[in-house]
Structures are given as C-alpha cells and as structure tokens.
Amino acid sequence: MPTPHRPLVPVLLSLALCAATGCGADSADPTTHAAPESAVTVHNCGRDVVVAEPPQRAVSLNQGSTEILLSLGLADRMVGTATWTDPVAEGLEQANAGVPRLADNAPSFERVLDAEPDFVSASFVSTLGEGGVATRDDFERLGVATYLSPADCAKSSFDRGDGSRAEPLTMQDVYGEVRDLARIFGVQERGEELVADLSSRVDAATRDVDASGTTVLFWFANSEAPYLAGCCGAPGIITEAVGAENAFDDTHDEWPQVNWETIADRDPDVLVLGDLTRDSQTAESGAAKIDFLKSTPVTRHMDAVENDRFILVSGAAMNPSIRTVEGIEQVAAGLRELGLAGPRRS
Image (cartoon, rainbow, N blue to C red; front, side, top):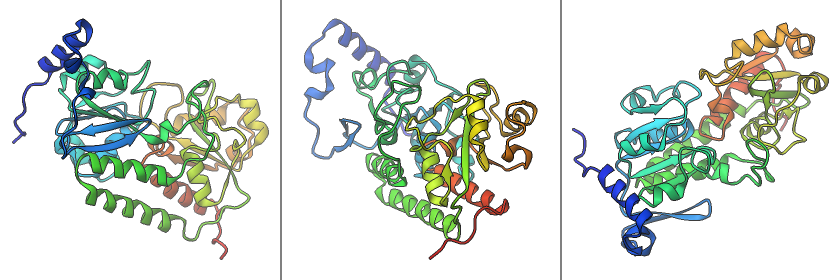
C-alpha cells in the first residue's frame, strides 16, 4: 500500500501565497529554521541541500536522474518523472512502469506541484533553472528540496547553447552524483554497490580495446544544424575510455552546432549516432540519421558513410549519466566489429 501522506498541494500553495504577500520571514523562508540534528546536508552546485528525513515523494525531471533513482531501488518513493529521450535502461522497465510520467518532455511547474513532491531532482540547468520547469528557488520557497546534477553545474559557461567545459568530465563526476542521491535518500550502501557495478562494467568493456588513431564523431540530433559533441562531455569520457580521438576535440562547447561542410572536411573514421526515440528535432533516430547522411550530397561521399561505419547509441548514453557506461560498452563493441580497436598495449 502507498505510504500515507499529508496532502502537500494546499500547503505548497499557502506557502507560495505567503511568499508573495509577506506572512512573516520565518514562514516564507525555510532556511531561517535550524535543521534538526538528524538532517542530511549535501553540498550541491553552490548551495546546501538539507533534508530532515529521506524523501518519500520524489520527482525527477530528466531521464538521467530518473535512472539513478530507479537503479538505487527508489521507485516506491517516486511520484513522477519527465523529459525522456529514450526507453528506460534495460533492467529498469518494471520499476519504471510504476512511476507516473508527468510529461515526455518538460512538464509545467503546476503539473509537478500536482504530484505533491517533497524532493525534485534534475540533470540539466535548462530543466531546473531559468527558462525551464522552474528554478530551484521556486521549489525551495515552497519547502521542496532540490538537487541538480553536478556534471551540468561544472560547465564554465552557458553563453552558447548547452554551455562549455573548461575541464573534461569524468566518470568520477557521475559516481559523485550517485553517492549524493544515495545519501539524501539514506541508501548509501546501495549507492556504493551501484558505483562498483558501473566501474566494473567500464573495466570489462575497455580491457582489450585500443582505438588509437581512429577518429570518431558524435552526432546527437538535428539535420539542419547538427549538434555534435565537443571535447569534454560524456562523449569525451567514451572516446578516452576506448583510446579514440574525437573529431571535434578542439572545441570545449558541450554540443556545438556545426555545418555539414566542416563535418565532411574533417571526414572522421566512424560516426557515432544518437538513436533517439523522442520526437523533438529532425533526424532523431539512428535510421533517420543514416538516411540523411547517405542521401545528402555533402555527406554521402564521406569515408564513414560510404563504408557504413556507424555505431548507434542511445541519446541517454551521450549525456552525463550512468548510461554513459552503456555508451562506452556500445562504442567499444562497435569499434571491435569494425576492426578498428586492437588489443590495448601493456
């Protein structure tokens, strides 16, 4: 049976009214109250996330965050998810089936509040920030704790599209997010088990893979102005793991939009294509991307296109998340099949 809970929407709306009309500083600003001794505090993206007790009604606003919570065995404490690019990760189907999907893309702030959350997490500033579902302050003014993926906060600039990174992302950043969420929910042992499993999978996938001298290009979506991977996001983790070279490692932008003439001029050995199932931009699926590449004059004579050197990965694997491990596995296996990844030299 569901855990009995006090209806939160009236409370949240009352708090919102107090914030707007000034019912008193203490009621409008939850930070003025001292946290109980049993509270857990996690430092996250420049602010402290304080939870008096493990959340019981969580909403995750991005697929990456959702899959971490599901992998930690927290489906029974989730009341909503949103913003999906792909089917849920293999093995999480049953757990995910019991969690309401508030929207395939970004839900409204009101829709999230209707779920009566006591905790909201997200993978991207674009979702939990200005111009997204709502800001962290919007939720926290209503007494709802929030958590944002440190992998996105680590970007040095959001002036261009999805932002840029001064330093390369690593799997340790992803593991840190797993540990943070496990601590917030009081399941630290599960968090360590998940990190150990992910690390073991990376070791197994890359043990005998050396793709030195092979250039790869990661295309996420959009055929008019394609989003390609720069040096230092999740695709950077993947290329580093298999020993390959990113054709666009000279840009620190997360997902620069590059014209096809420039892409054809670089003529990478392998094209890693996002196989998305959402319907948001052009050329979302892997099949649609291949059709475009083979039928467009500027791309159809690229070496990788003429020789069918394509590797399909989920969109989720191209984002910083536990699915990045899946991307490492898929790219490593694809390079082996193409004969472009010999044994790693000792």
